[in-house]
Length: 268
Ligand code: ATP
Ligand code: BTN
Image (cartoon, rainbow, N blue to C red; front, side, top):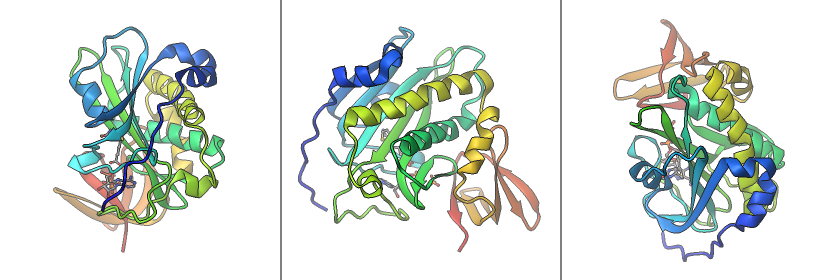
């Protein structure tokens, strides 16, 4: 596929600061024209801990990544690709449910912008009308305390003829909203949901967020297949437990599945 590079203007940082209001001082926000992957950049050279959360936005990623070494495809102006480096306090909960909490924040931000039928696919996808609009990649740094790099890829206006290999249905924000909000409005909406969500997660883990996640579970009580190198089970999707572990009712009884190296699909 050959897509000519679109113009992707940098966000107006003054407008973004204004849109973030009192939260603006909680973030250090950087924009780059191009990088490999915003997750990789923050993982390879983590900014010093100055008490803020560091956000890196890229107009273009030339090696965008999904889970399990898969590719994340994006195009300048057609996608929002950014990562947030978040340092937790020493007694932070395990990061297992973190991508679910981030998905919930992203879902709420999209809903506030007017998107309807937003659901969550365990463990890291955001769907609208059943089609994938965004993916989340959480990676951790081996620092003294838990430091997470949270990558978000959101489709804004995919090129018309785009084919995304190995993917199910995909959608974008322009298709769902009719027109796109300003980049600053969109970023502020996401960061304004993400900040309190991560603060809650840091103090109480996933437990308090579980109900809200369950309400948006794309496969609630539907037949699913969960497979990976060492697992292949089918059953009814019962949702997640208080740690964000997937619960599946199989013919042999209930099973708990950790995100690791598995994928969830609707059962054929
Ligand atoms: P799972 O997370 O359940 O294993 P997944 O298909 O969502 O399955 P991920 O690793 O989460 O897999 O995401 C990477 C996949 O997302 C890629 O293999 C590709 O199929 C798909 N993908 C890549 N770019 C995009 C995009 N811009 N929009 C939607 N989907 C994409
Ligand atoms: C997935 O669906 O598997 C997760 C996709 C995550 C994509 C985002 S784009 C910003 C950040 N940089 C990356 O290389 N990946 C994440």
